[in-house]
Image 1 (tube, helix red, strand yellow):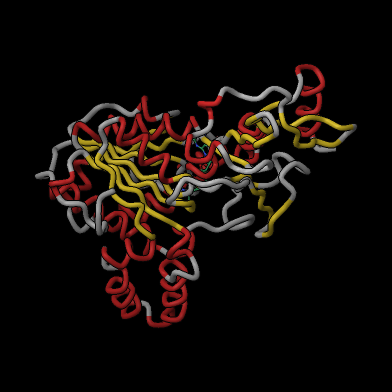
Image 2 (tube, helix red, strand yellow):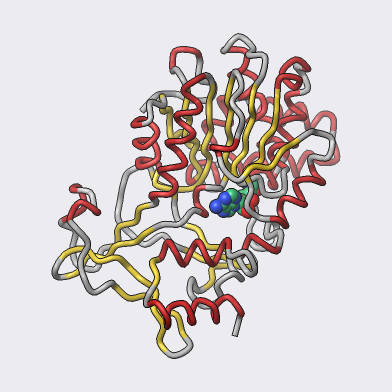
Length: 357
Ligand code: SAH
């Protein structure tokens, strides 16, 4: 049996069932055997937008350059990234930013990364730049401006699930049956206010998800952005608050059983953009979007950039077209992936967004 499953079974036998949020956290970030802690899963189990093409990171880099110009070029900027993976997004952003050397000089870079294995990969990718690793947004030093980007970070944060039963809503837990991990609802219902009014009367068997840790991080970001800056949260998820179990496991580019091999498969949930936007607004952030990724990248000029790139790398023209399609086509990543913008002040220009929310 895998070591992490054994550890979880022992924990559950000793202390009782654990929440889905606890399970996600342990499966992904257990110091010894958590999914992200020992290996670089990118490309092997799943692929993300920065790994599809340099066009993605370049557009994000130009976005922040524009934000910097709109704020009259603050002298010192903290540029932070949450969950930087291989460091590819940051490297592409910085390459695009080179067109304005004064911008590059203003930047200090903070990478918020939990995985030692991925920190090592990031150090290699970004070896030309001075970067500092931090364990959370709170550790990022205060400068005259704060910029942050997070791509496919929030989908990895722990989510609590609640199941509608006969007597109310019960937290969905994970217990042990012999050597198997199994879902089961907690015996006692939770207090009514755990589940929003809009879904409280849903039919029996319905599942409601919420991610308090995501909301706490977004509020921290909104407060930091409030001084002078902007943040982009890019992920797959839903715009309307809704019901349903979105927890999924992915291994080797295919869906896997969520409970079968903890630590061996990636676990994610759809990001609830409505909840993130609401949390950011409560912390005085000016929220824009969520904008579909395709529309956002097109508004920033990705098509033009792709044409230019094709001229300098003629032999790669087909690959560039394919990558552009993958990033922007609504049937591929263009619609499912969305971009939430959190700004200090909506009146100072919000490149890429068609409207506020
Ligand atoms: N942004 C990258 C990687 C996405 S995978 C890309 O688009 O390619 C998720 C990333 O978040 C990984 O770097 C993972 O190690 C990191 N991560 C997951 N949970 C985290 C946590 N709780 N704190 C900090 N980083 C975390």
